[in-house]
Length: 106
Image (cartoon, rainbow, N blue to C red; front, side):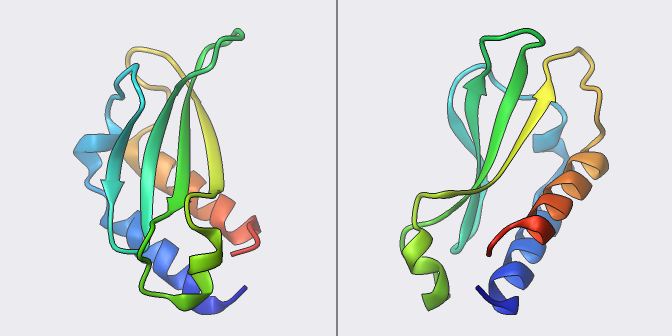
């Protein structure tokens, strides 16, 4: 769709505070957000191995007009094994989100 969309996604990922990526609730909630994107915890998968279902979604009212057609769509999904402590560091989670954005149709 465009470089601006991906650049905004990378900037958003970089802005996510490490503290919110060190553990996740078992219920659905928004973990981090800006005007264009949000990172949602969509719950825990039911099949083994159980995983946290994290989704990067486009926000309603996004600044970028090219994102408005994708409102509430999941543009990136990552599944993190439910382990204590988490098997991935905040840095690794951000790297995985970035890899998935690169492969996406944003």
